[in-house]
Image (cartoon, rainbow, N blue to C red):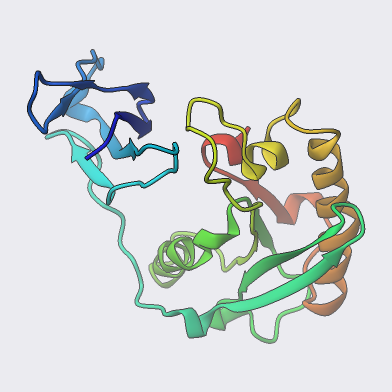
Amino acid sequence: EANSVFLCCAIQAPMRQAGDTEFWQLAVTVPRLDEAFIDIIPFPLDEPGRLSPYEALEFRGEKALPPVARHQLSSDDIEYRTIESAALGVSRRFSLYIPPELQDAPDRPVIYMADGQGTLSYAQILQSLIIECRIEPLMIVGLWHGEYRDDVTPQQLNDQRSEDYLWGYGDNRFEDHEEFFRNEVMPLVEAEYQVSSRPPRRVLFGVSSGGA
């Protein structure tokens, strides 16, 4: 039950209730739909406007790329750290995945990843590609974004994640987060985890707002 439903995230738009039924609908046109892979997450909004996302659904067209292989990993394979950030004025977590192939390696190539809460999922894909010799071994440093606020709707996008990743949200938050990343996280992992400081061996990765 909800007063309104907002669809996220590959397609973002409010949905319309189908008459007096419990069903909600949205019609969109997607070019080359048979080649598309689309994640579908409906967000019902209850009385106070709190976000209550349903389980994500997936659509994969007949000609879309197949699902990626994932190597079996667990949260025990991920290292979790917390840093007191002077730039942000709060504590922030970040996650690290070090493939077995890099355990004793110096000058480690690295992927710095936004939305570090998803480090495990991407580490499973990364390790599968390493085992198949499709990429060289890389480690992941995943920076966790700020917590979502539950007193706003998705349309407002007024949450700490947006403030971290999108310029213009909050007072200098974007700049503060950049300083946190460049002057606090990067020097720490370079010193403690032998992460390379050379640009050709560093990758910056993000999805949606995290890739902006």
